[in-house]
Amino acid sequence: MTLANTVQYSTAKDLKASDAKLEITQIKSTIGAKPKHRDTVRSLGLKRIGHTVVRDADAVTVGMLNTVKHLVKVEEAN
Image (cartoon, rainbow, N blue to C red; front, side, top):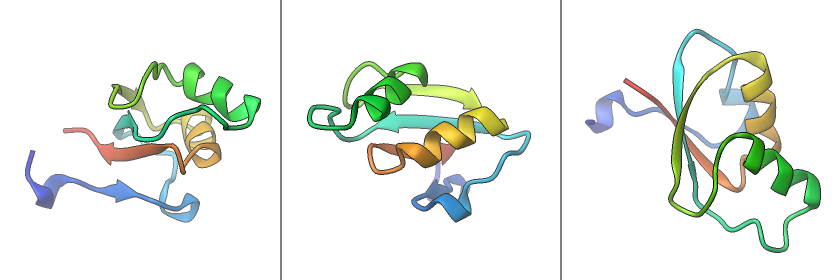
């Protein structure tokens, strides 16, 4: 994957529901996070730091990502 094809979202206003696939990586621990945030990270399918999953950018997933944007890194999958 080249940098030209990589789109990183760091704020809620940049992330919108679409037909794209998103590559979601957990970058921070959920230790000390709110229980709601821990549950959200787990619901996304993430199990540990560095774990990556690919999900559709539907409204539900985008809402979950906007909740835990400080714990994950999101890139557009090819």
